[in-house]
Amino acid sequence: MLVILGYILVMASVLGGYVLVGGHLGALYQPAELLIIGGAGIGAFVVGNNGKSIKATLHALPRLMRGSKYNKAVYMDLMALLYRLMAKSRQQGMLSLERDIENARESEIFANYPRILADNRLVDFITDYLRLMVSGNMNAFEIEALMDEEIETYENECEVPAQSLATVGDSLPAFGIVAAVMGVVHALASADRPAAELGALIAHAMVGTFLGILLAYGFVSPLSSVLRQKCAETTKMMQCIKVTLLSSLNGYAPQIAVEFGRKTLYSTERPSFTELEEHVRNAKSPAKQTADQDA
Figure 1: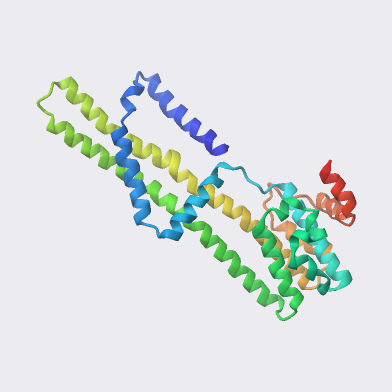
Figure 2: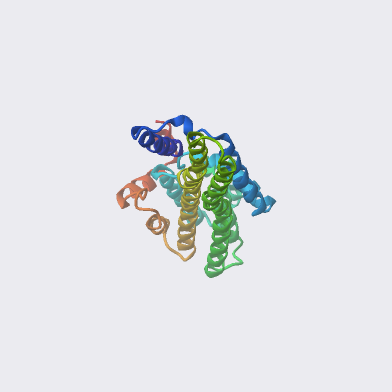
């Protein structure tokens, strides 16, 4: 929604300012210029990426129109979920988590946090490393190194569509110049026409430069920034899980482990110590927490 709002502001500002100085909107309607710039941009995108990168970029585009799915409530749910898992392992032993991690969707603990359960990446990240912890064959340093590798891999995968869009955005002003030059060539080839017609042809040619710059910096390039921000939010969730699980693995009590995880969150969504303590206290009573969520 914010992306659409931003596009509206861009168009309103640019076209509104143009109209205020007496410009005619009809002069900006140049389908041929759009065809040259848009077609060349898409062609360059196809040339500069392999099939996997193209597929990843197309898959990422719908997510740009959605708002952030990670807010304080989701972070609180994550903290409560991790607390309950660690508390169960501390009271009943790590082997007691086997049924929860083998089929998280049928787990009583996971079922109380549908917002976390709906995120397959986070569920897999939690269950995979709990499975390693249950096996007991890896120490904390080895698990931490493996977590870092997985997080880095995810960041690299996120960077592919973001970089692809950024590259297309950077190329559009140049394609706008190409369209403008072609328009000028056409205008010069018609030099025998009256001055008024020749001026109109040159004005139409200049629209290419305008469109290239506007599409690049007003529409395409900002999308790469949005993708990087969404990737950073998911990465932050993974880092929170990492710190919390490692703290538990190093022997800290569940209450302390989730406090370590809380410190990794962004300050804009990070719950206070008191809020987290209250939420964790409620997590000790699943029935009460379920009633709170329903309310």
